[in-house]
Each structure stands twice: as C-alpha cells, then as structure tokens.
Length: 94
Image 1 (cartoon, rainbow, N blue to C red):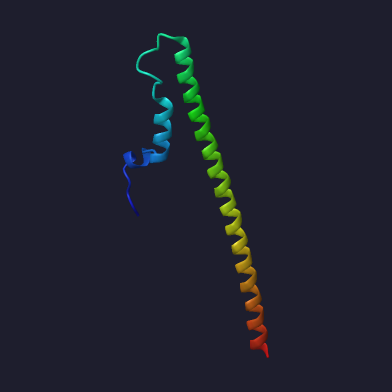
Image 2 (image 1 turned 45 degrees about the vertical axis):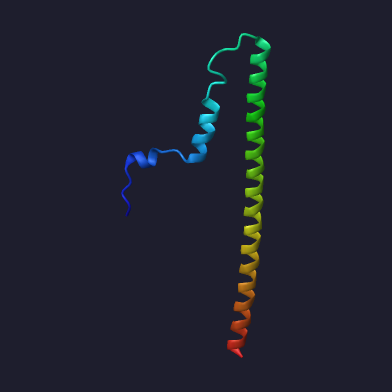
C-alpha cells in the first residue's frame, strides 16, 4: 500500500490549474481610460473563454465516441469468444 501525504492528494491536475489561472488572471493591470477599449478587452476575453468551452465540449464528444467504439469492440470480441467456446464444446463432445 502506498502512503500518500495530504499535500500530494490535495494538488490539482495541471490541466485544471491552467484553466483556473487563465480565468482568474486580471484583464489588465490598470483600468483603461477609455470605456470602449475596456469593452474590447472584455470581449476578447469572453471570446477566448467561449473558444475554450467549445474546445472542451468537442474533446468530450470525441471521448464519448471512443468509449462507444471500445464498447462495441468488447461486445464483438465477447460474441466471437462465445461462438468459439461453443464450437470447442461441440468438438469435444463429438
């Protein structure tokens, strides 16, 4: 049995750290003097977040598709193994 310290269990995966850091970083160090400039920065930040969400959704869809394909392969292999087992039993009974 491996004894892990609390610190090791409490750490976040690197992917989650990157997402949280990107979301928590301030837009700018100083507030812009022009409201339109601030609005543009906010729009760019929102667009970047939307693109990240779309990318994550696409990755989820692809992962689900891989799971479905893997499940189908398992079913096909199981069916083939069952058929071979039946053939073997028939052959041994003869």
